[in-house]
Image (cartoon, rainbow, N blue to C red; front, side):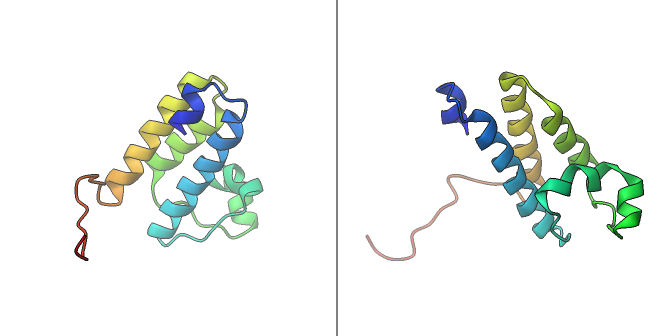
Length: 109
């Protein structure tokens, strides 16, 4: 994601929205929340009428929903990148963190 941003690549928006969807799917699975089709995702996160109509329960993490919807609505690449980083850090923290130096090789080199 950062590579695409720093290169000012034309596919930035495509990569951004795909990564947001992957982040949502990963976090939703972690929280044991049912998957939502990508074309209905925003609607089912914020629209009470649609949630009731389709029997969709509220997403269990309100702060995540707020951050996620804010990220979806952005149009400025720099702001999008900052929100994506903030959202990713939030999800990592909620899922127990991520330590890049925590890897161990089990087989001898």
